[in-house]
Each structure stands twice: as C-alpha cells, then as structure tokens.
Image (cartoon, rainbow, N blue to C red; front, top):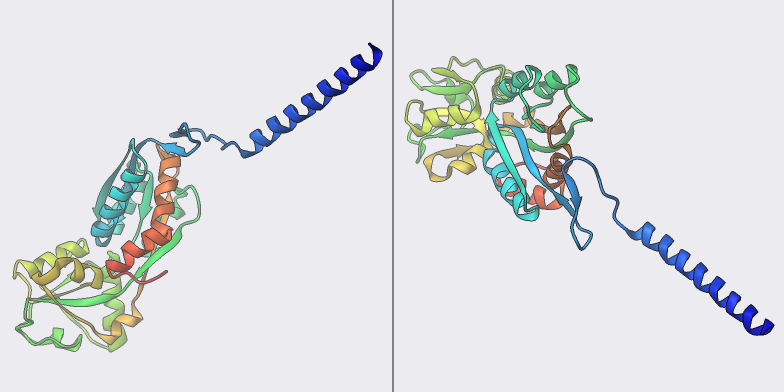
Length: 272
C-alpha cells in the first residue's frame, strides 16, 4: 500500500506540474487585449470598432478614400470618414477643437501648426512625398512646356494660396527659377486650382502631379525641372484625445505599410 500510495503521489505531482506548464504556455501565447475600441475575435485576431475620423490634405483624396475602403474590409465593424481640404485649414480646425483621430498634412510646416499646440499624441511620421506639375487644358493648346511659359502675357494661371502647401511649393519653384507670376486666382486647396483648368476658367495651374494623374484626360500634365526644388513631405499622426485611438493607430499602420505604399505609389506619390 505504501508503495502504491507513493507512486500515486508522484503521478499527481507530475500531472500538476504539467498542467501548470500548459497554463503558463497558454498565458504567454494568448493575445493581449487592448482597451478602448478593440477586442479579440474567437480565433484570437484583434478586432476593431468605431468610426475613425481622418483630416487629410486635399491631394490625398483618391488614395486615402481607397485605403479607407480597404481598412473597412479588413476590420468589419469599423468606418473611416474623411475631411479633405487645404492642410492649413485642417490644422486650424484641429487646434480650434474639431474632433478628429488622424491628421495627414501635405507639408511639415502645416503639421507643425498642430504639434506646436501639443494636439498630437505622438511624433508625426512622413509617409509620402509629392512634387509639382503644370496642369493645362487637354491637348495643351497654349503649347506650355516650361514654368517660364506661364509668365506669358494673356495666359490665365491659377495657383494655390501661399499659405497652402501646394502654393508654398509653387512659390519655391518660381523663386528657384527667378520668375514672377501674377495668377488670375489663388485657391484654398489644390483641387480647387485644378478645377479652374477643368472648367476652362484658367489656361493652366500649378498643382501636384498626383492631382494631374487623378484628373485623367480632363487635363494635360507638363513636368518642369524646378519642381525638384519644392518637393513636399507628407506627415501623418494620431491626434490627442482621439475618440477611437486604437482603430486610428491601425489606420495609420495601413497607410505606412507596404500595402498602403503601393496605393500611394500608383497615385503618383514618391516614397518617403
């Protein structure tokens, strides 16, 4: 009996040790849940929910709309809403208290408006770069082939306002070439400048090459070497007090991922 009893005790001890090891292994391998707008699905895959509000530069409209749809497909139960406008207008809205989760600007200068007010939840990350191009009427009837051609008498040219990243970049390009230009209008964002050409209210506009590409056959694009002097970096960041911070971080991860970079590259953006 004593021998049997001792054997049984040793068996229980081994079994107890094995169970403890399995519990420890399970604890190490189990996904850690996060607070806020996320949880875990039955198979352990992190789940997200809620509406991510993104304030983004107007030039990001096509690519970010596509990425928003991808995000919603990857994370059922989420929704991405966008406010596209001039970066300076968006920055003013954020510092004025407009609720948003993510800010994607068309220049580091406009992002600084937000970071200087300490309205970000981290350090902005550059996810893309963009350069300028001249948008002309289809067929380029005025035979525009250079930045200097825009200064010809009688030619109607639209520019972005100087406070807008595309306008600031255009001024750098003109300064680099020693040229001066008085446009027929200054527009509050790049899409508005491009629309002037599409509506034939202007003969040409200085916009981003991504916007020329997005317009398709509605305009004709003309490259110019001075654009290399005015390439804009595009930073993105999570905002302080973001209503859906966890989902917002996941959207930023998508933008900066290889998948997101492919979407941006197809739109004409340069690598960061």
